[in-house]
Amino acid sequence: FISQTWAQTSLDCDFETDACFFDSSTYDQSTTYGWKRISGSTPSGSTGPSIDHTTGTSSGYYIYDEVKKQTSGQFNLDLDVTASIGSDFYDWGISFWYNMYGNQLGDLNVLTSTDGGSTFTTLWTKTGEQGGSTEWFNAQVEFGTGVNFIRFQGNGGGGNRGDSAIDDMTVIPMPTPAPTLKPTPLPTTQPSVPPTSLPTLLPS
Figure: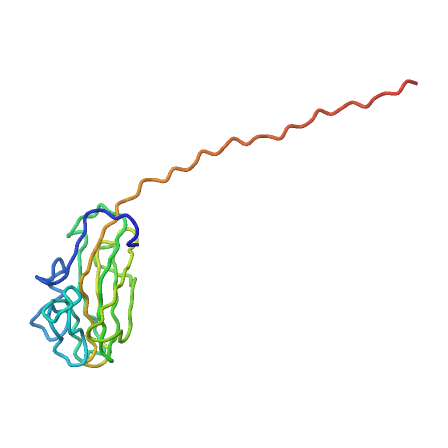
């Protein structure tokens, strides 16, 4: 979808300064589990990125899901799109970079809602370890009509080495396209029927 023409309005977050437009109640630096903004390596050994994607250094920031041996329980990072940039768009796209280093990774999901966060549909999922601590991968997800709430969801894989991370996220609205005009059908030409010739009468 990146090749399509998008509106100029966009929301970008590289997490260098803060957690941007994400709902602050869904990430908390003081809790043991859940989404946190950090630079360098995550506290658990042998999991999570050692550098961010924006700067490619250990001093750059990203946001990650600290799971700590959680085999169940979903840690959600929420974005109310309507509150952030309005609702005058019919379609949405998202591009982000993710790191999933650790041999006890569960899964990382992107979900959307069209009713303000009451119910969700999963549109993208990545499961298990994906590369090393310095490797970031790009994901692009196109949303359907009416999406007004986006959720990143991390699920533990049963051990400390299961931290997933995201960085350099962009949410781009796409304006309602002009209606497609149907071509005017050409009139149907009826085939011409040759006149029926009368039989020639022979003289008696």
